[in-house]
Length: 282
Image (cartoon, rainbow, N blue to C red):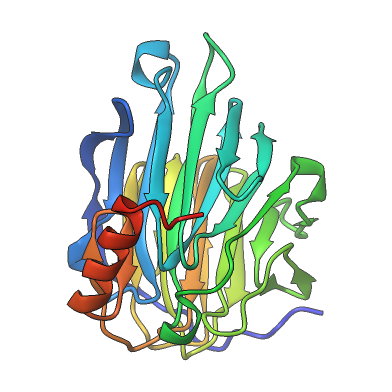
């Protein structure tokens, strides 16, 4: 059943990502940076990566720690192997999703299992509420075939990774942050509408083509932060385009980040560093 949308949100701000590298030299674009964490609470970071040059990705992300949040990796193309010190292992492939709750602490690696071809996708960091920051680590791989999809009357294909859109439930839900994560493929001349709870912060990121939200064009490799007035969003395009739509319920809690640790106080950051340095991320 489609949820009616009476007023579409508009674009509040356009963001151009920052070219950087992470891990052992993987080239990527950091779209959601620390400066936007309060505005886009509960989201902490969004990286977009994509290259057909193995030198840009082959070294991957060797062992590194996390505490206090969740990582969501969506692989559009390529093969990446996950291993962590909680005993989890999985292979992330074309169209698949890896969802990891770092909780009280995990050390993991993400290493390519390809030496040529395209590697493309996104990694999103989703905050945890204070009461769950020290939860037991959790990990799950979802193959592309497990991601629910629907096709609209205008032949728009929508992949529902988290939350729900037009009556279709995604593979993951979270009670505290209620994330919505959609991958939307629009043919030329199509329009797409979905509801977004008025409690949620939301944004889009276009990775193919160009779309219009109201009177505002959003080009490829741009983020459009959606204003908080409206009960959904309508996206139009004159050319074949693809984008992700992400929304979530803000936690409205302090955010204190030190690299891969995101807590609520400076004291908790000091404790995370001490625990990691003394081998207590077991």
